Length: 80
Image (tube, rainbow, N blue to C red; front, side, top):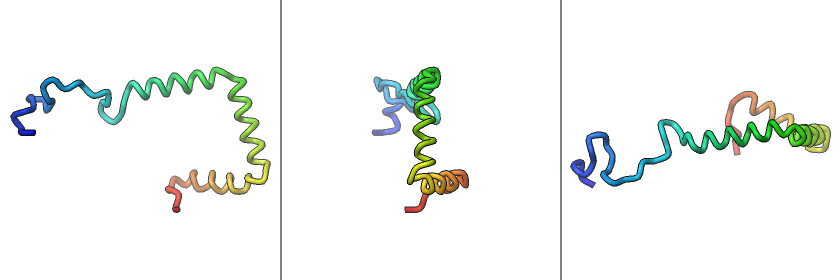
């Protein structure tokens, strides 16, 4: 594409505007936030997930989960 093929704003004539705005997609971010709020409002689901997490921490994988939590708290990416 030649520089003359774009408008002054850098857009290609006839091109459909992207949903990506700035650092992210506002439509997807809004949908994600709505879904998270709906999940949190469903207290039965939140309670069930909390009990599942507690059982996992108390179970055979508890030590591994605690190590993972400690590593995540440091803010360093996991080394493979």
